Length: 114
Image (tube, rainbow, N blue to C red):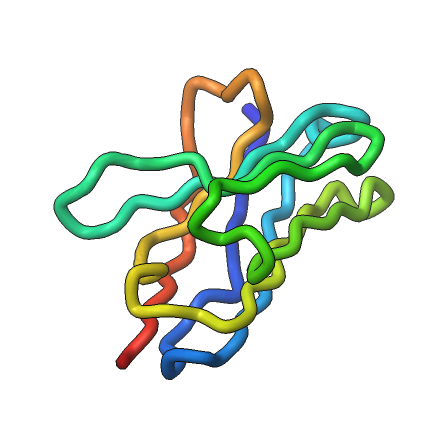
């Protein structure tokens, strides 16, 4: 099965930045719609952003203007540039294609301290 590997998370102070990456083991991302999702402690996983095959992007209102979704089809990798981070952005971040695969990667932990 295709493997999804998220990376780039870490601990950052409020107002800081991180760049997340998600690599797929196959060409599963090529030309397909891909999403970033996050799951905060005690909460359900939520959608964060989407990028289409042509590069159009959509964001949940809480991250608009702060997060930027991009992709590199040659590397089968997508990125999430996160700026002006807030404590409420603390979560484990995951990527998946849309429609979603029936499994998830391990995610990458983002912790924003106040």
